[in-house]
Image 1 (spheres, helix red, strand yellow):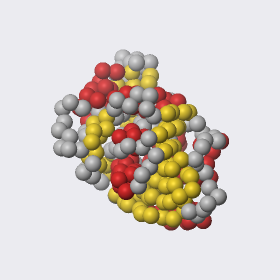
Image 2 (cartoon, helix red, strand yellow):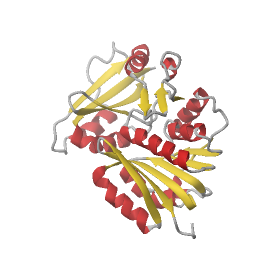
Image 3 (cartoon, rainbow, N blue to C red):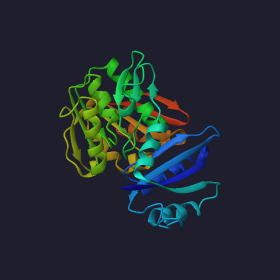
Image 4 (tube, rainbow, N blue to C red):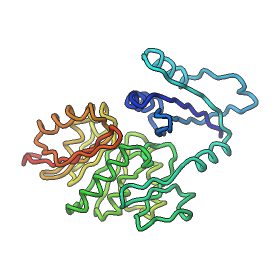
Length: 298
C-alpha cells in the first residue's frame, strides 16, 4: 500500500487553527512540528492504491478539497503540499525524521527502531510507534500532559486512572510505568485503540491496560481517582460533562491540549463544577492543568 501525505505550513500564531483543521480532516491522527523558520508543519497521511506512474497529475480528492475549502476562507498565508509516497519511501521517511523526545529528567520517548540505539541517560523509556494516532510526545500538549502526570503521581498515591482520548496510549503507558494499579485507556477511534494496544506491547504492558472504543459523552464508566485527557479545547468543552463525571470525590483531573487564550474559560468551568485548580504549566503557548474535585456528591 502507498500513502498520500498532506503537508500544511502555517505561521505559529495560527497553530490552533491547524490543529482544529487536521483533527477534523484526519481524525485518526496527524503530526505537528515546529520549524526553524517559526512556522508549524502539519502532516496527515492516508493509504492509497495510486502509484507514481498513474499519479503524475495532482488528484483533487476529498482530503485535498476539504483542506483547500477551509483554508481559502481564512485570511493568512499558508503553504499546502500533497505528496505520494510508495510504502518503502514512506516508512523510511518516518524512520529518518522521527527524533527521540525527552520530557524533563524523567522520560525519553523513542520509536521502536531506535529503542536500542539511544542512551536513556537514567530516564524511563517509553516506546511509541508513531502509527496514525496523535500523541508521540513531540507535541507540546503531550509533553505537558506527561509532565503533569509524572509530577502528580510522584506526589500523590494514585490507584486508578482513566485516559480519555488515548491516541497512541502514551499517557496510559506513563501512568502504568509510574505505578498506577488500574489504568484504562479509551478513544472513539478503533484505529487509535489498535495503535495503543500495539504500543502497550512495545512497552511490555500487554494485557495490563484495559482498553475500549467509547464515546465518553455517552458512557457510564465508573469513577476514577485520576482522569487525564489530552484533547483540543473545543473537544474538551463538547465532552466536558462526560469527562468530569468520571472523576471521583477528591480525585484529580489533568487536562491538556489548549492554548493560553483558552485557559480562563476552561478553568472557569472547572471552578463552577467544584474543582480546585492545583497548577497549570505552559510550553510555547500550550498549557496543561491539574485540578482536584472537592464536592462530596461526585
